[in-house]
Image 1 (cartoon, rainbow, N blue to C red):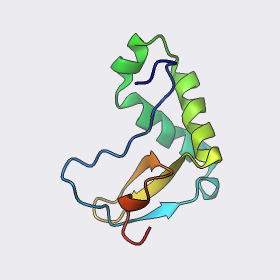
Image 2 (cartoon, one colour; image 1 turned 90 degrees about the vertical axis):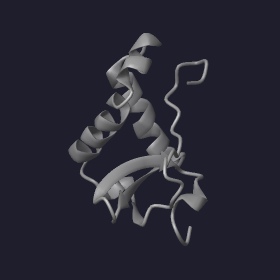
Image 3 (cartoon, rainbow, N blue to C red; image 1 turned 30 degrees about the horizontal axis):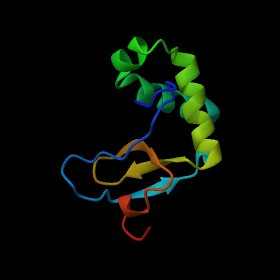
Image 4 (cartoon, rainbow, N blue to C red; image 1 turned 45 degrees about the vertical axis):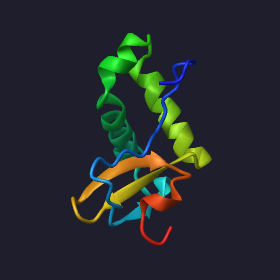
Length: 97
């Protein structure tokens, strides 16, 4: 976690393999669904964020802004049929990107 308590989105695939997936433009996802996806993403490590004095809504807004700015992107993994949020600059995260 960085010092100003911002959410840091990192690509962390434990098995070292690339995802077989597609980038889903965040603006093509309904706002309610996107917010729920971001909330799930943020709360995966909530104990760490809560200790930093952060609010859930604040962290959700940070991730939503990162999606809008292109600093993060939504990826649908075809293998696991799940969505994830990864850094927008992780060109090596998907084949062909």
